[in-house]
Length: 397
Image 1: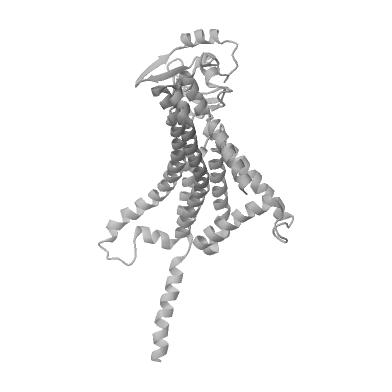
Image 2: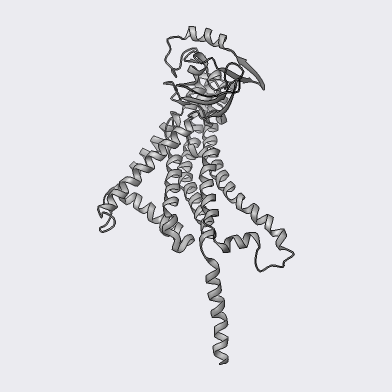
């Protein structure tokens, strides 16, 4: 056990040391934690290089017509498509036109796309242009940006991993392994434990008889969030669940299942709350209606904030090395490095725990919200109420 723990800590230390942001800080002399944890249209494998991702735009041209424009990378959109990268310098936007890009392209004409050059340029454009806002040529504007981002790539990777797990587990169940006999192997025992935990400790207490109907959704949400959380902890990885759009989509599914599955009793408590004076009901109705939307909003923000905060803390601790080096010299930077890495390693281990906790919390709250809407609570109340009155009647008789 001690050897395994030591191996894990060593792996975590290597992962922190191999962070692309730390490598960029070594090149640029600074580290922007928010910038390096944000979304981007390239995969960062610094110091190896950057792999630019396809850019896809729906554009309205100057004459009013619409078109779909696809580019294999941001560099291709600028150098070959004539698009303009608007770069923000201290709050002022400066658009670098096609002519400037052509000169840069001539200097780096033979550079491979996404390859980091010694001059700090990538496929003929600077890093600032690579991260700038793209504007189509000829006076048109972008109606819809469907470009592939790094968070989307890792969300797809998370879906592939979850699909692999579920298909493999389903295959074992079809053969009777784990259904007619005990689970076999580390893989099935591990995921069988998680599946039974979600079913018995999360779904059934909140959904009761309707557990089987909503269990597939809860299992999918749990494993997808957990996978995306863990992918963000591997070297060169990105956390899709630290993107507010991803967490909003997940919370939206919970919202839709809650509202469309809501019973008559659920809507009655929202639109005309029973058991309170009539003059108070118009006051409570807006509050109840607002509560319908605040629940999924809280789900989305909680997951996004927790996953983002952990990464920012780790990056900020690593950034202390370069901050001290810039202020007091390289010697102080090297002296601070062990302390920064030790604290970052502690937060990294904490992030591993948070990855499981946040997947559990999102799934638990989703089951709770759905259960409050779809489970017939009033029948139990009526039966208990009837039994309460039946006993005195029998005694009187």
